[in-house]
Amino acid sequence: MSQETNNDEQNAANDEPVVEQTTDQSTVDPTRADESTTGSETAEATLDEVNAEIEAELMDEMDAEQKPAQPVSEQLLEQVAKANDQVLRVQAEMQNVRRRAERDVESAHKFALDKFAADLLPVVDNLERALAAIDSEDEGQKSVAEGIELTLKTFMDVLVRFKIEAIDPAGQPFDADLHQAVSMVPNPDLEANTVMDVFQKGYTLNGRLVRPAMVVVSQG
Picture 1: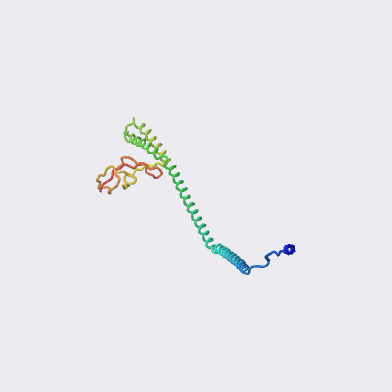
Picture 2 (picture 1 turned 90 degrees about the horizontal axis):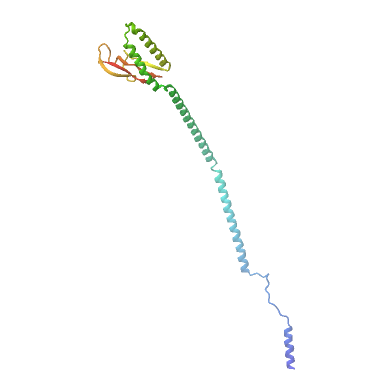
């Protein structure tokens, strides 16, 4: 009997419902709830600070763009003024270059015959010497003298047509730019530095000296 009783009690114990220990998830620890709230508030405060910093930077950029508006305009005006000045300088330089080129071309045209004229002058000198050496009273040489004189005249006309002019300064004051003194001779009848005699005529081409006149000058 005792054994059966024990078995019945054991079975009854086994038949009792087992109460599971469960944790109600709706129940939250107050400490954790406070920590969560504090973290959310901190995150929101940080976000607000970041937004405020971004807004401040944007405002600074906008101010920086608006403030230099006037200085930029002034700088542009200065650049335009400098560009205009450079353009004027370039134009002036181009005008100077053009004028120099025109003068060079004109000078080249005027004095292109400089060396050629210098080479022709000895021919004139020889014709003049030949004419001076002929005895004008000799009837046999008269025709020769006339021929040489005609040749010399024609030659001189050609020289004048090409702006080659003779310098014959007999009786004129000595000019160092046009005359070359061969000697100085005392002469009380003439003023000092007066051309007494011309050994060789000088010549100019368009006003520029090709050859100076070789002269004898009086000495006071």
